[in-house]
Length: 615
Ligand SMILES: Nc1ncnc2c1ncn2[C@@H]1O[C@H](COP(=O)(O)OP(=O)(O)OP(=O)(O)O)[C@@H](O)[C@H]1O
Image (cartoon, rainbow, N blue to C red; front, side):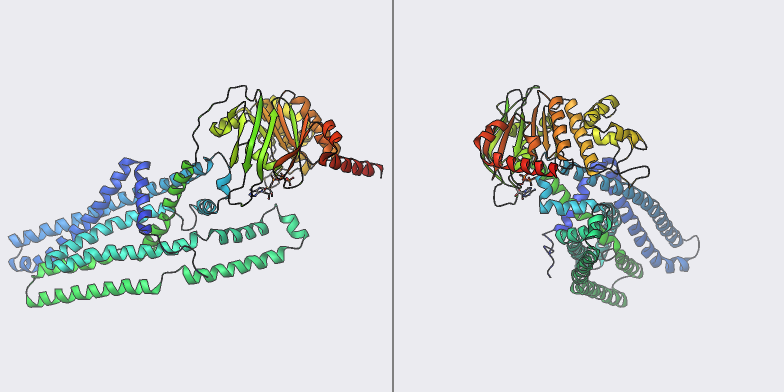
């Protein structure tokens, strides 16, 4: 097993930290300026104390010899006062620095989350939600704020390490006064050690974050075992043992992987610690020799020794350094995702008149393949849908019916040809504006764990408070009595996972979803798309409902997809789709007279229905 794409990109750790620093002023410029200023002070004040302490140690023998009141004693007292003042001020500033970093960190985390959600919601279509790389980022995003994926900790780590970095640089410069090569060696050593360790933490972090596919599989298994949705099937089929076995296996693989790759490599640790030890030994030896030879006075020697020891306060190896790397790692990726999804936005070049579609919606030589798929599901599709008429689309499973309406709704863009509305190419129209004219109910409609009122009003959320209108949408669906019988009527939550909530039968859910579609129509939608609108209802109920829909939506452009011919026959026009093309087109009467696929399938279904109703 190899770690996927686990080797750090060039300067990846540094770029992640820079991305965090770049975002900070976007939260607050004054507070970021305060952060920088206090970081310098938190570094400079202990350094001042270090130098003062060293000089004080050197000055004590002379002060003791000269006695109280002597200039030597006064000099020692001044050094003591400077040291103590630097110490106290340092502690004070440090508190301000950390409190500011804490707040900035929390806000940065929220900012990153917010930008991510906005970026993911921005594309008009849904293709990006099926892209493996984007799904990997979304997994990370869902975990933002949990585990080690905390940009907040990156800011706090930065608050901790930045002053240490500056202090170590200052101490190195002090050592330059002793020996310029030793000083320079320390000046270079700490950043090098820090970068080596940050790269190592980044590598470890990437192996954990970026195994998206494996993690998603294992999380999926866990959710199957734990969630209410699949619980019935899992138990009825006796799948729990199989599921847990598979989850255990994936878990063991993950642990094995973690043990092998998600830890610091010994060679990095040995290399870094070895380099530190060697440099410390050389510095100490040279200082000792200079002290013994009398080349450096006692006071200077004390300053150099304190400077050398103070450099070991540097957090290259501890949790702070790890959290800086791990917390910063997702930030540039989220910013890159934001850029990528923004770049995908197509320019708006056309506006539709308020009444559109007033004439027709046309598919002109439309082709479409799902992202990553080799074969197109729609090819050379020509279809003119007259405004104000009802159209039914039929065809065998996988013929491309749902794909056709997804294209019409702008959820995907055609890979060839164009879709026009009253002659205007939809490619240039703002998808959000176009969708205000659509009311669509898909076969896999969402069962929102919200109140009945919200489940219906989501068809036009700006009218959610219009109770009369909600009841008006319920009436034709025959759900008024059902809603009245619920504990809180329209305000009952449709989920048994909530207190006072309730679940509905498949057919009842479908009627609620149909009421949602109708609510959108009442709010002004001009095209109604019903993709298998009532598959959970019996044949008669579906046909009756569709009949009612046609009455209510007379004058509207409606497109229905159904496998039930008793429903389909009521449409003004029917098209049969096969291999993503229209193969038959006409009214029920026309197609029956044609004696083709439609007539054959209709007769078959009608015979079956007649037999069942006789028996
Ligand atoms: N998101 C997707 N990604 C890749 N392929 C897809 C996706 N959705 C559908 N397909 C494929 O596109 C083809 C057409 O699917 P579509 O859902 O349009 O068929 P349909 O005619 O509505 O079928 P049904 O009657 O079963 O609902 C199928 O072969 C299906 O596997």
